[in-house]
Length: 389
Image (cartoon, rainbow, N blue to C red; front, top):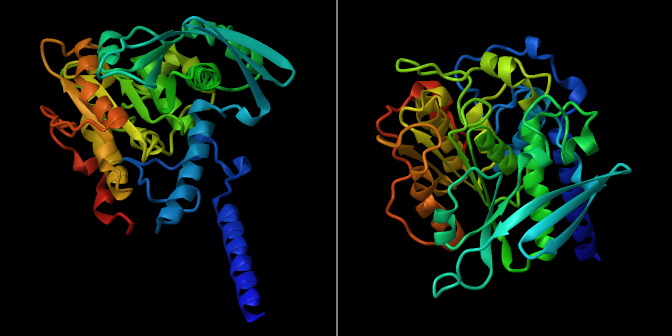
């Protein structure tokens, strides 16, 4: 009897503790200030401080709550709110290497295609293979040579890259304040749903996303919004991607800023974009502890390579190290002569990191090498006072 009472007491304690954690983590959209009312933060915001309560993260459990708060913030002030996938029904059809993905939601349906490309079978590449989902415009060969399949889609079939709301995503969600980057991220996830249904040759525990430039921004969002993504590769992505908002290094050339996006591509984000209570290092930290790597051209000034390599990487790696996942984050700098925007050599250079994540293949490549850029620890002064893990 006493043992039964003790068991019931422990169960009740666990339930109450769990309920308290859920209540403590809950973030109400009604509590979120207007962008103009957000405080100005000159350095990278501290990822270990709750933005709405100023409470400090003290444990891994606290980090899960902080991550939930941050997920709400990035949707409120940048991406728009990601559709509730539990309210969607995905049906996939496969003909050869062609996929047709149909999504039903809220009494509507929309369809878009994707294409599969498989690596050659040999003594090294056999059995079920990993896959990297992408919107095209990449160098296919290095992925296939690494033994990785590709699932490719055309963004115009999902959400056209303009203010015109055409494509499968907008057929379903055209009345919502959501950015096109979120729509493209959503497409990666629905393709993964389809692969899980009709492509048994692909190992869906080893899934990556890759894109360059604006599609690198989308790859980052895809990694943030779906924890099935094991490896995110947002290359040369600039602002709204890996490029920090608060630190620009322009001695050699201008970098992309928020006013440039407002002027030319306001539809990439929701309509709320303005002052931000977070920065790119926190977008990356939302992927943690899963793997992420980005490649930058040394002289690709528009994407702010020094900021992406020295500032965002430095700040995000503090979080990864704190989570004992420091080996899951990396960078690569393309030096001359292929040091411009979205250079093809970058796709080859990132393969050792990909092979480590997908196949466990050891590598001697130093993916923490930020040269020729200097470190900028002044951008993240909170790094010297991280919580105890």
